[in-house]
Image 1 (cartoon, rainbow, N blue to C red):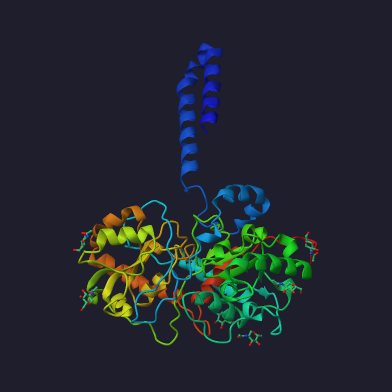
Image 2: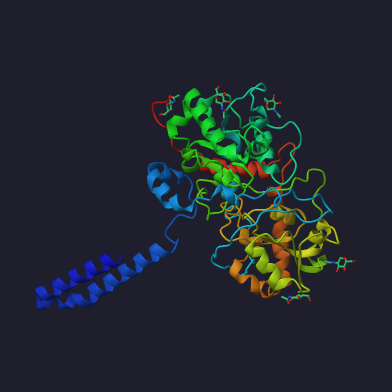
Length: 466
Ligand SMILES: *[C@@H]1O[C@H](CO)[C@@H](O)[C@H](O)[C@H]1NC(C)=O
Ligand SMILES: *[C@@H]1O[C@H](CO)[C@@H](O)[C@H](O)[C@H]1NC(C)=O
Ligand SMILES: *[C@@H]1O[C@H](CO)[C@@H](O)[C@H](O)[C@H]1NC(C)=O
Ligand SMILES: *[C@@H]1O[C@H](CO)[C@@H](O)[C@H](O)[C@H]1NC(C)=O
Ligand SMILES: *[C@@H]1O[C@H](CO)[C@@H](O)[C@H](O)[C@H]1NC(C)=O
Ligand SMILES: *[C@@H]1O[C@H](CO)[C@@H](O)[C@H](O)[C@H]1NC(C)=O
């Protein structure tokens, strides 16, 4: 950029010295170069000139795999980073306390406390979404690699035949819902995408595999399907995807380079600080504690007594900072250990519910907040929020950088009742997208994930393989 500026500048100078008459050009040339310089500068620093949506940008990675691996080379997450069994437990059922989860390091990201919810639509473009959704719903086809009940790894590869439970239920819900949906095709030539049905959560608990064996298992699985079927080799896995909610997913594919580089990873721990996660290629899966029975309770915005609520173990520097700053505050209630009141009652009684990065950027707290009509406050730098390319998170959440934890009270109290009422209304509007159902319902979490996949379906069809 700077070089082109000087090039233009010296060109204009040369002209000037050629003939006195061209002195006339000095101001013009200078003005021209300056405007060019400014344009260059703006285009390189702002996203004004780049399209808002980056559909099918995965193509880039396919063409330049080496460039991509270069970028990510130094950022491997060591497997020792994984939570110890004591650190992680499933979140307790209602009334027992807050969800437990992981601890990790925080990295700064730009702050965004300019709150302005007026005229904010929950969709970036609702009309476009609805139009696309109908197309997706009627044409999208997935080929699921078939496995028999007699397969020794059937427990890992087939959908469960009970209602999924617990912190990582999103993974099982997706597989089960897909298995029973109209998106599945038995004819691979009709498929837009291919599903790798291994469950990372189940591999973790399988004594034959375990945490240490997951990487080898996935490598072997890819070896198997790429030898038995022609589909993987056609695109190096670019029209394949897997779904995982456990944060170990981010290192599970470390020995299967093509999965990491080319396949679509639909994961809960969608941090764009992680080398293994590539926004736009990969997709964020919402972590949702399943609540199938009841309709979500509705408590109006004005009935909520507490300003903000957080409960959870203090297992990360970000949470440590939150506790240090706000533990004695009467408006922001921060709890660790056991709660006197029920977790659900607290979520129902609070205006804002804090989602604070622990071990990973994701927890079930955002889903919990939505379900209870509480406006989520997200303090998890680098979290690629679920469905962020469809939904306008600014309209139904408050996103705060870790560095701004000391300003939390000021930020939340500066939100007027009208602004809060709008945020709350939008929460009630979007929460249907963050629910799983035994039988999927239009626009619920299952369909939203399908839509994310549809946006990422490959336009690459290698000619000559049909
Ligand atoms: C999506 O497809 C399902 C199954 O064909 C159908 O029941 C549902 O009405 C469709 N939804 C929309 C919005 O078209
Ligand atoms: C998966 O789909 C197959 C075929 O459509 C069906 O027979 C099977 O019961 C389904 N499995 C589960 C666990 O729903
Ligand atoms: C790969 O295939 C071999 C031979 O069929 C089988 O024994 C093994 O369990 C398979 N491994 C995986 C991870 O699917
Ligand atoms: C896919 O590529 C691998 C590695 O080049 C090769 O060994 C394998 O035979 C190929 N698979 C098929 C089905 O041709
Ligand atoms: C909160 O209260 C405890 C107990 O009174 C005290 O030890 C601690 O320093 C206080 N923390 C802050 C941040 O004021
Ligand atoms: C919980 O109850 C105990 C005993 O009633 C009380 O001392 C404590 O302050 C309460 N804690 C909270 C967070 O309300």
